[in-house]
Image 1 (cartoon, rainbow, N blue to C red):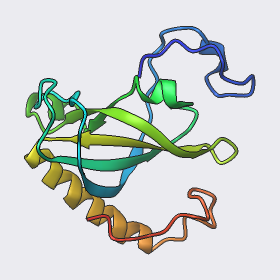
Image 2: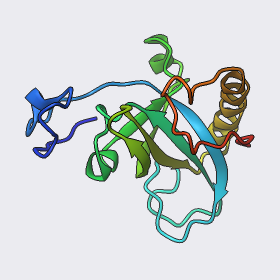
Image 3: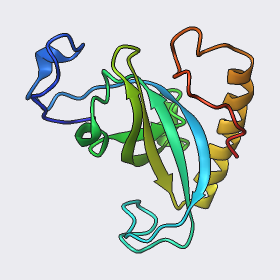
Image 4: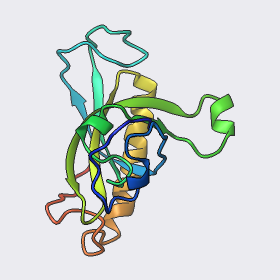
Length: 158
């Protein structure tokens, strides 16, 4: 993510980079996958600015020190299915832009961002990945570890 921001707090992990266009890299996982009714022009590479017929929306859970606020979220591009550099040449990796920021907690260092895609193939891959993550998360108590909000409801994402 490239973003020039100057209002990060003094105890932020990236405080030394305030006001600089320095790229930040982080990891995250997919949650809450759903079909969206889109009325605005789409920003994805598939629609080229048209209003899409179908769009799959999904939430990405990541560290708040990587994406601090809504302004940074809307300038964030997420690379999905990146495992190593071979993902670049075989087109396994796909990128999407963040549409907005949801719930976040600075003291627990996490946030949720909303993304979308109109690419049906990518949508199916996202749904499959979300199902695997759902099974994994249901086997662990991430709320008591402080990695998720106590208000988090585990529902099947697809």
